[in-house]
Structure formats: C-alpha cells, structure tokens
Length: 327
Image 1 (tube, rainbow, N blue to C red):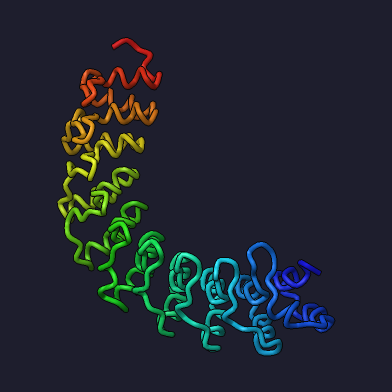
Image 2 (cartoon, rainbow, N blue to C red):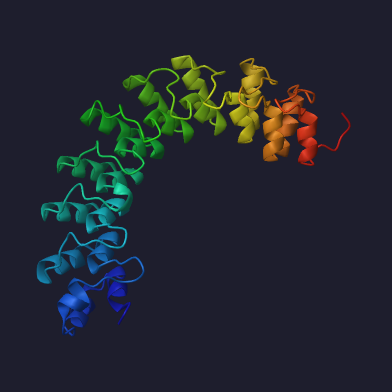
C-alpha cells in the first residue's frame, strides 16, 4: 500500500486508483494530506509531474486536495507541471487559482522551471497569468538568466518582447545573462543579447570576469570571436587576481583557445599574471594539464620565466612530474 497510489498515478490507472482510495477509512490522513517517499510528494505532485490530467482533476475536484501542498523541496504541483512541460496541467492549475509565483527551495518559481525546459508555450501561459519575470532565486538569477543558459532563441526573443528591460539584471556575484550565455557557448543567444540589449563592453562580475573571458576559458571560440567583432572585447583584460584570458585558458586546459589568443590575437604567451607572477605555463603545470603544457611549449612558452617566488616554468613542470624531455 505504501507505494501503490504513486504507482497507479504514474501508470495513469484512474479507475483502479478510485477503487483503492474508496477503501481508505481516513482520507485526510492517508490520502489528502499524506506525503510519499523521500521527496515528500503528495498525490497531486505525482499527477502533475507525470502529466495525468484526469487524475489531477479527480484529486482536486472529487477528493478536494489542496493545490498548494508542498513537498520536501517546497515544490507545488504547479512547479512540477511547468518543469515537465505538461501544458494542460499547468493551465488547469492556473485556472484553479494556483499561486503563479509560488517559491520552491532556493526561491525558484514555476516560470524559472519552465525556462529550464525551453517550453515557450508554458512560459507564455505563466506570463499571461501574471508571473513576475523579475523575481530572483537565491543566487540572484531571474528567468532571463536561466533562459540565457538554456539557449533557446525563441524564448529569449519572447521575453525581450514582453519585458524589454529584463536583460538589465545581475546575479548576486554580478554576473549578467551575457556572462551566462557566453559561458555556456550559446552563440545565437549571445548575438541576440548584443543586438537587442545595451550591455557595456567588457562588463565584469565580482571576480573581474568578462563575457569574453567566460567564452575563452570554456572553449567557446565562436562566441569569443563575436564579442571581439561586435564589442571590441579586450583580449588582454585582467580579472581580480590579475589573470588574463590567456591564464584562464591555461587553468581550464583550453588548448585551442590558447592558440587563438597567441597565434591569432598576438597575446604574449609568456605574459605574467600580476598577482603571483605566474605564466600560463606555470598554471598549466599546476593544474596538471599535459596537453596544455605541450600546446604552450609549441607556441613558444619559455621554461625559464620566473614567478614571484623565483620558480621557473621548468621547476613547475618538475614539481608535477610532467617534464621528461631535456630542456
């Protein structure tokens, strides 16, 4: 019996579910208010998550279950339906006056959940019913940040059409949707943001990272090229620790990005970071990126450049046991 009702809902067996529920002597304790499994889901959560519209209607209209019940993560049935893309369930819950901007753990709204699935129809339904796109989760992301990460151009265009100023937002650490799109390599979204929004060139987050740096350190050279062409991004800009994009690419092991910076953009392969005086070769050795070390050496990186502790690149390689050939 412990897992019977959730299983029947998952399998969409409404008739058998009704029969079994009719056998229960205390509906409030064992059905209407009961939380199941480790997630603490109610029967409404199961129905909404699996898109069982007939069961959802039965539970609400016949059994009288409260549509605002929450599970362990404070998700409500509307969160589940929006997240899983069940539009009929979303519309039904909204028509039954479900709270459109209800918050789950970490302050995520159903609209944010819908944006993770790139579901334009459900996003539109939630907005039509009054969802607030400016609400932020605990990390300071609103739905536009999330849409920028997911990378659906249609969703981006819709949100900008509906809310022209929605792009003007930052997370708790100062990251914009342009940072997010660049970091995840969403080329078409980056183009939309540069065309329709007024982002300043080389806008920095709290660590001094720019969208160009995000693109470089994650290997998205197409995005980096667009930022160079349309915003004249600074390919030598330093972050809060004095690292240039060159150093960030070495830290994350992005060989093609290093070649792009050095061979195409003319960045000095032996440029030092201003904090500890490390070169890209020092960083690559420190992180143990063998392929990156080989790439830097092929680009002419010197083994004899010293950091502020007077350690050469060769010493750094020896410390990581990567250097096996003669200097």
